[in-house]
Length: 105
Figure 1 (cartoon, one colour):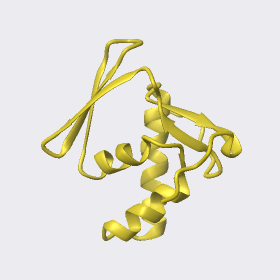
Figure 2: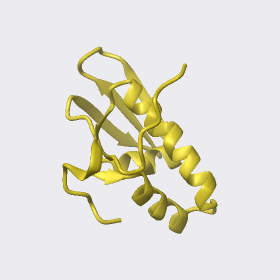
Figure 3: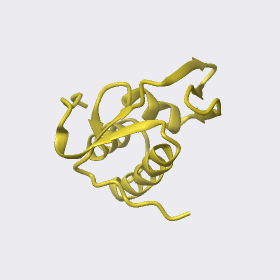
């Protein structure tokens, strides 16, 4: 599956049409538009927590590299991949060039 890369300058936020329940190191998401469930755990859970406020990919990586043993380059690649996947499934909203305010991270 080929999806367009989301620019690092884009502000990303969890889509409002979701139900999310976090428990035991995992978050389960229900997309209310299509009725499909998704699950994220470990670092994916942490990224989801960060996406509760508008934030840029680079800001997510700043937080993750301070909390986990990961290089900035690997983090950026992995976060881009996950955010692309979340966007392709309609779980996040993408706003170019900070049209929303960004959470500090």
